[in-house]
Image (cartoon, rainbow, N blue to C red; front, side, top):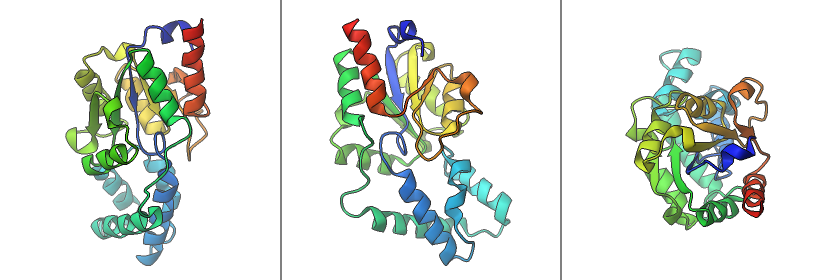
Length: 226
């Protein structure tokens, strides 16, 4: 990671599921349970291929693999019921270092946004539950853009709402499709792995890679001290 370029960053845009919240493992479990109930087996095995995709593209993915008769709407309803049952009233926990990195960026006057393929309802429910809505000057969800990740639309819209040139904006992602979307938008993609840890297919377009949000916070703190 080029520390000199870090000093030029004016905004940071966060992915949500798997990056800010430890939700992807719950999604994987709920897909498996729903898939088995529908007779399609452990569909959670497909999550690595679909991370970052919006609803429309996930439907295309499943119908390409299981045929046009795949009951996508029924699958959606069933896995969502299972997901919320697994999560319980407390919801999914925040990832390690989330509050720390938000405070570090705020202290540096760096703008923050969210770019998530999830629905607006799901996104704001997570932010409100964790009491972090006020950190973000822009929140862009999957229903607000035409093309989902790996196309750059959602990140370009986030930069537009933050009123910053993408070349001065860092994107934080756990998913390969999200990394590709941020790169195509002209941003600085940083991968913080969750379920998918093998980054070889995107290493050549990464600005950096950290094990956790806490590690990234320490890098920003080191710049401040320097």
